[in-house]
Length: 375
Image (tube, rainbow, N blue to C red):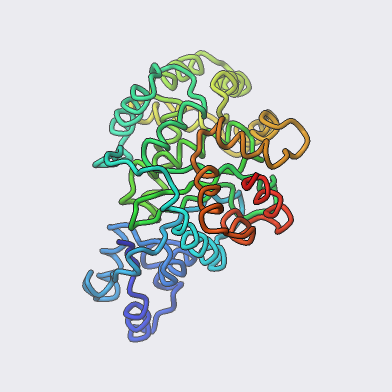
């Protein structure tokens, strides 16, 4: 069941204390935006923040939390840098989730057993244990390069349906969207192909973490765990160990960055991911951290060495025809999304407006895609 804070009780308590939302945010040591989103029903404070909220406003946990619509779609965005999630973004995603309910009966038979991490933890040893088990399940050694194609089977095995989309490289608020339908536990994961491969792999690993931890969906704790899991899965301890020792022998910053960049290129992941995993490894083992500045030494170089986009690798430079696009979704991503959509369109004589709404496409593109699905 999707839980949210009881905004009416909180607002009443704030009025009694004469506090603003900003003052409450300061008391909880969170951003004012976080408080605003909670009061709008988006996300739930972490347990430690809930306790602080209870103490600050003298409200019981029962007074702080209420159950929302039990089948309200649970959403999570993978936002573009420097973008802000607004209530309109949230409302649009929830509406799309409600529309997707109509597609569920056309999906393949749902799985009885799914993989779940029972006690997701940010502790370094726990994370490494979790990603080690995942790599073993995927048939990968601890130092093998992880391709995004290796992750695809895990989504299908857990009733998480990949929806590859072409949303452009700059025009949207999000590059990925995760929609969980609680009643059926079906997940739809929209992934923008107009992004760099190293970013795409991280997002897929991030989304897999969400699939493995459905109880954390839609929470800040879930986002933190998904980010930590993704980094560790792409560059686990064995690789971080090797990179740290190589960097420890470097005499200049430039040599350290070049070493990290080589590892990033070898594994087709971002320089930032490698850097963060090496620093986490050093911290966990009590070793000297790398003497680099994240902004000036890492991000500046990272943006200069970015590779091609997923769409460029799959389609070349020209936009794909609808049939080609559907073929890639079916065969490369092994997604049942479009076959299921095709079954629904044929069974119910559903028009292109539905395709437009669930894929967020211009109507002309939706009509072309609709026609291709009915051929």
